[in-house]
Image 1 (cartoon, one colour):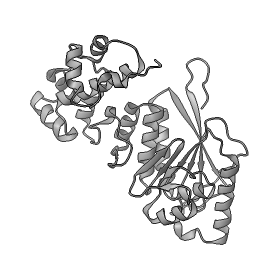
Image 2 (cartoon, helix red, strand yellow):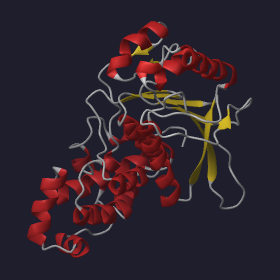
Image 3 (cartoon, rainbow, N blue to C red):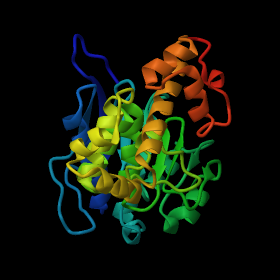
Length: 330
């Protein structure tokens, strides 16, 4: 990642590795997320390049990919490598196995300590061949779990996971989970709000399982596709401290107050008041962790009537007191 002068965005170089018989959805889904991320904000730009051991590549649906860049000899600082999955039925063919080895050899030789590795579906097997998951938690498609354990005996292979994050190692399970993982990356690198907006545009859910990284509170109640409720949520997230009366939100959502209350609970699983409080508590947590403001100042900035009010609502969401979230280095 490089910081450009002035107001230019930070640039993350993304190298998309295309093995023989690439699963096209492994590429198209995650890369659409990154494309939308570039459109939706100016903080970070994902500079995506498509690379392979050969200039032309096949896909599992018969669509050819041409004009691919060669595997680069050197990677820039803070680069990201995204490795697509491929057809399991072709991996034992001699020419395919040779090309896959060329990719894993390149990964082993070229990946830097600051390189982020992202594997989609069976792409984890290529990363594992390069030793990139040794000592790390990882996952892959359920049909490839046994192979991953065999190839990477020093890795901690997780089953029944949508995706796994371990430092700079990210891996996803079956094909469509590459979208889930990439949304998580955008949420982490850019913001949860942008990730939620992209999920809404792509009409996908922000999915997690009980063992997966906990979804950010900023994204809670967003796994629906109702535009009126998203409008109300967008307004609350944009300014949590505002005076969010039911009447004001109903105007924004273009609904009656009664209809908004019913739809909001149906779509999000929360009442309007509970959602507002959740977002305000989350903002208060972020302020506490990033500043030395006293509780009265935090409460005011987050939209609470007093520090006492903040603490009362806080107890509904956290077992630890607000002071436990204070970053002493702030």
